[in-house]
Length: 270
Image (cartoon, rainbow, N blue to C red; front, top):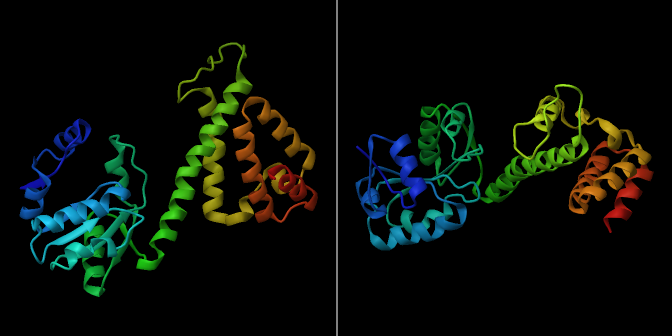
């Protein structure tokens, strides 16, 4: 029988519905029973949890202790590995929002694995393959850069899309063509449907073609169009305009575009 520790009402509900064959126990009891102990807590909480488990003496020597933190490697597990545990870092490179689709997304995902030696890497690799994922070795001293890259690509993508949808809502306000859905502030509406094919294609192109996938007025070096965009966005939200300006500057640098546009964006950014 598997054991799981859950404290909040939400985590208890998830444990009961997604791990129905498991028994909910205090952390120390789960640790004492485990041959494989998986620590799935927020990055900032992991060091304290590890220290607490080490102080309790609940983790037996030889126990495999794996955490799912992207920001940490195996050094964070030192209080337990010093007591004879085998430490592994196994991070799924996937976003989780607490919904049912989270589990399905694990299959075919990549997992960033870090271990202290080749035996550890072999165990981590086997565990990931058993879950249907693809193991990717990440050196201990590269975990922070690895995590920053994933956060930049996934978290900031959400921010960009949410901002773009907000601007679309503003631009589509008012009466539309006959039969057009009314634009409101609920997700999954007309603005999302309008932008979805575009951003899906842009993501696919970026992954397959790199920076040669850049298109649009910034990549073309169209100073007038970009200046007009900034004016329009500032009328809606100056923070949105500032984000557009910053991303436009980076896009212009990647595209090595019109120097006049680079100058405009750099000056505006000061």
